[in-house]
Length: 279
Picture 1 (spheres, one colour):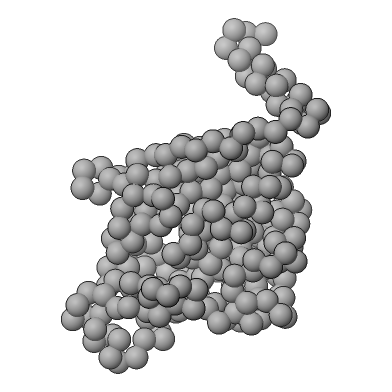
Picture 2 (spheres, one colour):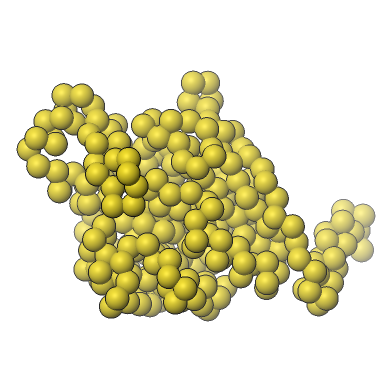
């Protein structure tokens, strides 16, 4: 055995002992700076070391890494000795930056930086709502480079192309005029007393990331979980996405009595089971 390989061997042996005897790897709080100059922002990260493939959780629009889905996945990772990483996008949770400065490009850049810095080997990307769109964009970029970092996707009510299809398409004339005139529009939220601030920069930037109607080839298994009673992302959006993932092994779970959050105990069990099946 070479000197260079000895540290890796010690780490592997330690992890094997952790799994065998049931010791738990601690949850680590960390951060990373993404961007430069005035575009630099501090991204808060929680990661739990463990076995592969790991899990990278990508939250939704105006959500954070301490939500029930992320916590359920972390409990699964702790129990099974699997690595898990979660983070807050800029302007979300405890990360730096203003929400109003956020765009799909910025949040995608942050997700990619976290993937590179805090994960090793293949990962199961779990994307919730907007995070589902970002997970698909990360997976497509990974396939283009041939790096093999994506072991599979679990998409939870994926808000694919949301800036065009789920926001702009439902804005009336007055809202569009407000957006063009002031550069922002206040969208009432079903989950908060405060409205979402939708900026023209977010809508315009989203155009460069639209997946549209073209076929999507991930090269990895995909499991989509979607509630029929979802008022934010219509369930037929998930069905259409399945038809475009024609080259991949895709499972679609439609839950008749579930809404957008997918945070009931029975929903969380389905999510964990989907991740476990792919991992």
